[in-house]
Length: 504
Image 1 (cartoon, helix red, strand yellow):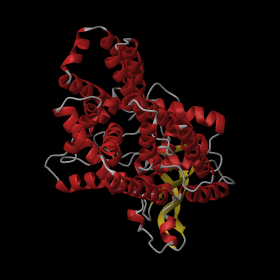
Image 2 (tube, one colour):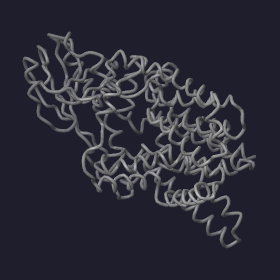
Image 3 (cartoon, rainbow, N blue to C red):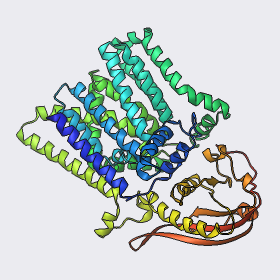
Image 4 (cartoon, helix red, strand yellow):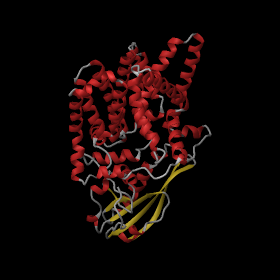
């Protein structure tokens, strides 16, 4: 019965996501469009990330076309697989009929951070899947004695690294666990963990090969993002506030309680599974919390740490429920219900913030998290019209100075043509590795930039004549939520990027 309830909940959520994407409520996020560009140029790796996201998008577009659903179907399918793995894992940890696992899945689906990751096809969806799978394999390898799970953990970690390099946090998590669990340290003297590490290295080797062929550009990019000098408490507050918002307040408090119980049971009393789960929650969250004192940290970077934290929470609440009387259970049930309702309510609003506008509480564009997911189709339609007009006289190419705009142009302009990204002093990106506009001398062009802006001097010098801008304003109701400046450029000569040190 519990398994049926789990599948009914997951399939209902999946159906909603498919319909939501098909209805085009939100456009592709810039990163989604950029990964789609990667999928049109398959390779062993890419400038800033591993190749797994491009492979997944490639498969999705093979079955569903070069459409938003084709790009996002991978995230939707991965969300089902991740939910199933969590259900199985918690059932194993709790040793019950699956009820606790069902609660864990429902709690995570009520968190806006994880709900967004179940629709948007970014590197976080496959990363989270393989993070959970690696945890399961390591738990079974250590506690069942089945040595084959070390090889499976190595494979899962290798695939996770192909999604996001932060998968390396498995190593400090595992070392912390061995520090807390002396009875398990005998594994360090056996060959199985090291064979698993060789499997990881074998899978990840394609990224190393690609980087060796491209002057180790991914590692240069990562090294260039070193923390800034000095401590900025405003960034710390922004980081913690972002966590609170993405979890929603009541769920954040619940997870805080679960982590507190996990600290007491896992680190002080050395009890399982709290000891194992805390070992996989603390290093990642602790690292990014400390990093926030010196650098800006995106709120979603800590998402994998919340998976074991959420499992600690449902296990702790399960224990509390068994200890409470009727009045206490009524209070706890009401608090959990209120937390879930608030979480699902915030998640619903995050799917469509115009719900607030209809209720008279319109968010200013700078505080609306969905603004970056709107207006790209409108921009593409406007550029498509201009491109048709200009192509009656000459061949036309599209370009921008930002990779986000370039990627959206390539996806949303009619015919999905190749678009180019010029360097006006920015750091390198994947477009620079694919080559630029040098071979397009004599062509006309359409240049698009976000906001209402003037042309930079290098672009003015690159063409015989430029007209514009034509402003594309994106409205929702009576609100203007963003704007684009579109310039018609005639007679391309050559583009000379500004001199200076190459930024990574």
